[in-house]
Each structure stands twice: as structure tokens, then as C-alpha cells.
Length: 521
Image (cartoon, rainbow, N blue to C red; front, side, top):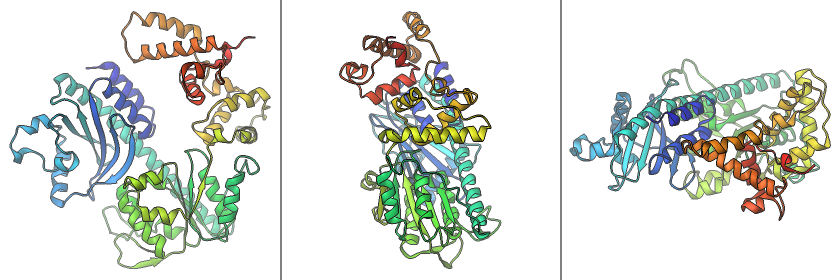
């Protein structure tokens, strides 16, 4: 049993983070111990039965979020469902020597047999309902007993990671539902339900974006907002709605990535009472609730292909059918979609319908990342500081020029959302008197001297992942010492190490290294 691997995975499982952030840790652990070729994770619904390929990793590529529905015949569905309920691990070398009748008939559908590789299938029992299915492929013909024991031990924390992901998505779905019901009710009462957010950067980094908003808002055309996570796609969608003729009607946001695959039709189009187990009453879907207004489909790239087909019909003729109903309902809804994913590439790979892409991308709007609009950092910071101080009931701390310079040096992978969170944390840490950005940004949590001393002791210890981190951190410190704390430019550490400056800054944040500590004076 590899206790370090188990502890690492349990620590990751307890983060309560989305699966897309925690699953790579599981894969890296396996890569260090197995000649890993492929990892695929499936989500299986029990009633009605459904199987979705949600994540896949193939060496040497990156983790892909797919959400592809797997079509199985009724006989294969029954066979796979029985195997999942039995909870028995299936290893390819164990079934390859048996008779053909003993080999699971669904196995060939999910993974084509390869004589040079060994495959590992295991069901994952989830407390949130449904099941998971994990497929591993390694570059050898058999697994050792120690490897099988390790895999068995790692399945429990992996199941917890999937459960956490399901819970987070359900919370997001319920939050969106509550917000939509609130907005609809306030609209009917004649009140403005939209909390019109101040759009900062209208005359700066968002000038071109707001020009596009002004062009498309008065029309009924669909719009597609493309931008990184946290860059403010919902704010732009609301701006389009507020400037349109539909501004007095509901604006409803739906996070497509938070919708369970088996409930997508019910959520979008509604259902009739008794149409499936648990349908205790008739329910209107999001399209009906947004009738006359705007439906914002966030993370549209997460919709399975089957749901994309039904969405296309509503966009084309405005007609929908509730689940379990034979009657069509006419709706008048303007759709604004958004995603952080590369939809054109997904279209080429067959992961997103080309006809739906053309229907949605009538008027695309590309939202720049925060590191591409540095001129907006200062006004955004002032806005978030004032808002945080008001919410916390403390005095508004001053924003110093040094604070602005520090914020501009950071590359903000989480964009505007991350900036808001960091500044609120800085206001809390500074008790309203000043901004504690050093702690808020996570720098200087450990003194360089202590980390360097760890490096000396690690050389004679076990060569595990932590000692590798210490070696990398020490190398980065030596580079900063040589360049006197300079990161950019021809004489900077990034040039010395052959790295992009933004990449180096990311590594410095990861290892809690502050370049300012290495500057003279």
C-alpha cells in the first residue's frame, strides 16, 4: 500500500473542488506508478439508465471534459447495469483467457481490446445516487498484485471526489433555480429584478466588447460570449438583456455544466406529472419561465450531444415539448450562450453539433482575460474594495500605488472573479485599515530560508514528490538571486530559465516565492 498516494488523494478529495480540478491529481499519482496509457471516467444514471463519458485522458495529452452520451442497446444496458450493481472489478487479463461467454458483452463497446495493454474496469458507488465507471489502460499485459491493491485503495477517495463534484453542481443548479424564480417574481411585481452590476472597463479594456453589445442588444439575434472562466460573461449577457426590448421580461441564467445528464430535458423543457419516477407534479422548464425574455445558457459546451439536438429545434422554430407530453408549446425566448471552451475545435472533433454552433454564433463576442486589460485593474480594484468594505461594515482601506503595481504583476488565471475574491480577503486581513495583499495573494507564507534548509535535508531522504518540489523551488530562488529579483526582460529570471514570464509567475505563486525579496534595497 502506497500511503503517500492515498493521503494525497484523500487530501484532494476533502477540498470539495470540482472534479475537473481534482481528477488530474489522481492521474498524476497513477502516472508515477504505472505505465499509464488512458484514463476514462463514466457517469451512469440508474433510472432511466444512461451512460456518459465525462472525462478522458490519453498519454501524453491533457485531460478532456467530454460529456458524451454512450449509446447502448437495451441488452447491453441491462448487462452493464447488473455489473455495476454487483460492484465487481473487471481486469482484461482475467477475462481474456476465459470463454467468450464469460467476457462482459459491454466491454468491447467501451474499449477495443489491445493485446499489448492491460485494462482495468471498476464501478464506483456514489452516495449522491447513480454510479461511476472508471477505465484504466496500461502499457503492459498484466497488473501486479501490489498495483491492483493500490488501485482498490484509491477508488474510495476517487468516489468521494465524484460525489463532491455532483453536490457542487446540484448546489449551483438549485441556486440558479432560486435566482430565476426570484427574478421572475420581481418582474411580475413590476420591479427591476436585475442587480445591474457596474461594468468597469467601458472606456478601457472592454471598449470593443461594449461596442458589440450596443450593436446586438436592440435585435433578437442569438449571441455567443466566449471568454475564460471568471472573466465576466454573465455581466455582459445581462448588459445585452438590459439594453434590449426585453429588459422588462425575465432574465434567466442556466449553468449547463451543473445539469445532470438525465435531468437536462426536464430542466430545460419541463415535464408532466408522472412522466418519470420522482415527477410528482407538472413543472415548467427554463424556456417556459424565460418566455418573452432572455435565457442565458452558461457553459453551453457542457451540453451532451443528445440535448444539443433538442435545443436546436427550440432555437429554430420556438417549439418545445415537456417530457412525457405529446403537445408542443410555443415560446418566445432570446438565447445568449457562453463558454470558456474552444467550440470550433469541439465541432471539428464531433463533440459539438456544427448546426447548433452556426445557430448560436450569429453574433460572437470575445471577452478578453483580465491580464489582457491591465488598464482596468485599478478601477476594478477600487470597485471591489468599496463593495467588500460596505458588505463587511468596515472603513474602505486606501489603494496605494504599490498595491496597484502588485496587482498588475499577477497574471490572474481566475480573472475578475479571482480579483474580487483576493481583494475581499485583503480587506478582511487588513481590518479595513489597509490592504494586506501580501497574505491575500498567498505569497511569503514560508520564509525562503526555511525552504532552502528543507532542500538540504531532502537530499538524504526519500526522493518523493515533496523533495522534487523543494528542488524546483530552490532552483527558482537561485534564478531570482542571480537576476536580483527581476522576472521580465532580457536580464530577467524568465529569460534565464527559458520560460514565459506569466508561466514563471505562476510557478512562483505555487511555491510561495516573492520576487521582491530578492531585489536590492
